[in-house]
Amino acid sequence: MKVRLRSEQDTASFARACASWIEGGYSLGLKGDLGAGKTTFVRYLIEALKGDIRAVASPTYTLQHEYPVRDGLTVEHWDLYRLKELPEELFGRTPKSVVRVIEWPERCPEINESLMIQITISMLVGSSSESDERVVGIEGQESAALLSRIPPELVDS
Image 1 (tube, rainbow, N blue to C red):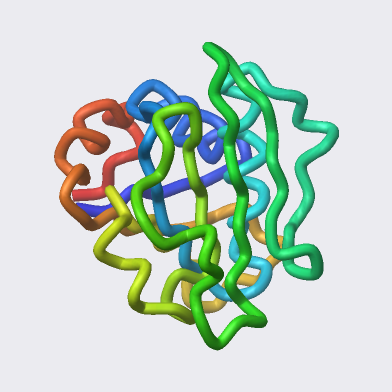
Image 2: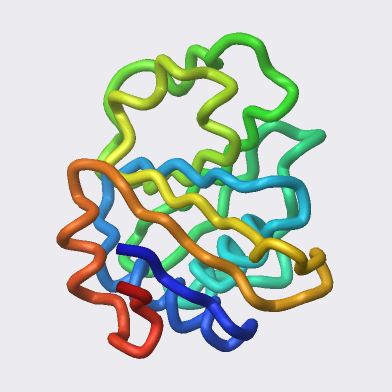
């Protein structure tokens, strides 16, 4: 099953559904080409978790950003794009006070076992990064739980 995001408002709606599913201690992978909308998704996820979206930026050059959000949680936003090995901070369990969003998990495949889900954001064939329309794939041990929270109008069966 796939999710179709036809607009930026759909991205926000999808992020709200993810926020309603997320719990402390969760890690999720976020895949997609450059310009696919990974950081835009994170911005809306932070907003849905009651964080300050003005601070959200791609961590490509800094490796990791932290955003305090609701209920004493912190979202760690990681970017593994420039790495060849997993940072030691990502070994072991994610603390219960943290949610980890890890862009480019495929760069360090050893992280895959710790991810609750992997979200793949793809631009539709023939579209550009300026187009809002995306297709989202969701896989992993918690994918069914997350899919049950996504608004039906976004599900593309």
